[in-house]
Image (spheres, rainbow, N blue to C red):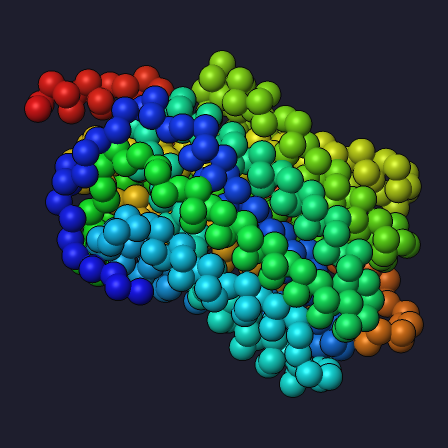
Length: 461
């Protein structure tokens, strides 16, 4: 790709003011989140169910197949972050890596769902191989993509406005992929193969538009790389605010991963209608489209920590309510999921906005720009924990006797497995949402503390 990889000295790129992020760049950057949201949504929603109910893979093996490629992210994401911190090219530091993702991710994703006519363990091995490649290709795109906001602007609230565009497209992508992908996939292997091709095409278009749309993105300052992965972990540990934010976000991502992976089982075995997977998912993601301005206003009025607490409380309350869906019916279940969706919308926006604040604060305190380091570790932990939610659900199903099946085969599930599907996709996510809320009380970075750091830095120059 003609990359010139070298260490970049801070300040070697002309700084941009906080007001120079144009609408076209905001939109171009935001379109890229169609990729990140779609990739997070479709495998999280369908991959576990695809293996247990279409490929007849035992639940505990299916859980491992979902989880282990994501565990690889713990190694590849920090590596990509470090390399992108050190990259110099005519495309900038981040965009060459995004382009590498454009060229690889759509193909590997489609192949994950386009395997030969295998079932059981052979099918699991095929899916695991291509999902491993897909996770690697996704890291090439996601890590530099998420590092860009902290380098586009140095204003605390401007970052929220920039990410509001991102979250709008996240909402659109999740809404469409969560509704359309299950409808295309249906219950047959051929449907999943077609779905993989369709989603691969969506990934290609969104990534390419984002790559082109960020060509004119301003740069406040270039990042400085750590020399090794060990040094990256040390850098992360040295930032108390990053450690706390990472911990609370991991709790929230585990909750989201378990709830999302449990949705098809909840629809099939609790509500008795697999088709409600789509409508349940619409209730989760619909609020992303309409509540973003509200969450931005709440973050300004009560600061981001207060708004985050509210989002966690709503998520937990809705998930607890879902546990009683068997008694109160489908309409009640959808209302509870809608409450979850409102809270989840806030968590999605605030996580990314607070990460950008942490990166900016670290730069002010240490004098170094380490966006790639932090986003690499962040995305690695986020994806691993999200997949761990599906793994735990898969194991819960396995130990309670869940019976895997192939299309067209009706099997009676033991009551213990149905109970695991219910509580594993409702009360378990609620518990971790509450843990995230408690951890949020330890997050201390606010607009005032960030402003004080900026003042001290200016006084020392």
